[in-house]
Amino acid sequence: MRIGIVGASGRVGTRLVEAVLESPGLELAAALVSPGSRLVGVPVAGGSIEYRPAEAAMKSHCDVMIDFSTPAASMALQRDIGTKAIPMVIGTTGFSREDDALLDKCSMHRPMMISANFACGFEAFKRSALAFASRMPGAEITVLETYHARKKTDPSGTSRLLSAQLRAERSRVMGFDAPEPPIAVNREGDTVGINEVRFDMGAAEAVFSYRVHTVAAYAEGAIAAAQWLVSSAVSRGRYTLADSLND
Figure 1: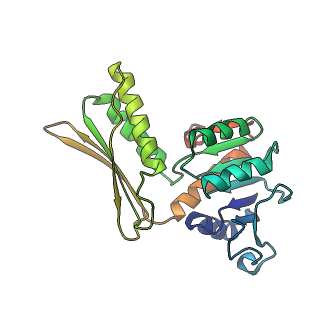
Figure 2 (figure 1 turned 90 degrees about the horizontal axis):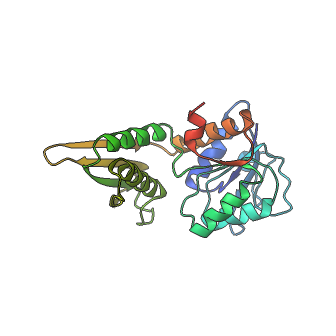
């Protein structure tokens, strides 16, 4: 399977490139970086593929592309690809409503799996927290996150996803519009990622916690998602990580 990596010089992108090069049956078709990157024109691991910026005329012959870049770079790529039917796995976060609407339009031309968190096991963690919320809808919920000190201080896409879905689940069970759980943000050292959901029931408390030790978890999950998109031969449309786990 030939894979193109978008955001190949980032934390997750770098690990994705390494994982593809190390894995039998996978081939690196493109390593795309920003036009101003110092890596432009540099061979990837001394091979025949060079780091290069995305452009509308590129011909990388990818079976699938994995995007861990920025919202601006991700939108530019979608416009460059146009109506091509290349399957896409998108782990980029921070999209605006306008960006999200464009992604919906692009999914009319190709299968696209979009998730705020591709780390292995995250979907199971999220489902467990949602199941508890459905059984204890009166509990006060707080979403907490801890990431490395260099990450921006705004809540991550993962925490926003958790908060929104927890609110929706409580609202469904209680029959009225529940408030969205607050998000507590912490930045600490080189922490890769800790996500928590706390349920305060007054006399008791339940805490669901998920910790990522290395960025390899995100890379491995994204590659698994890419393999699902290609091997399942799904039709054009927008998919979530949950879709790949429901087979």
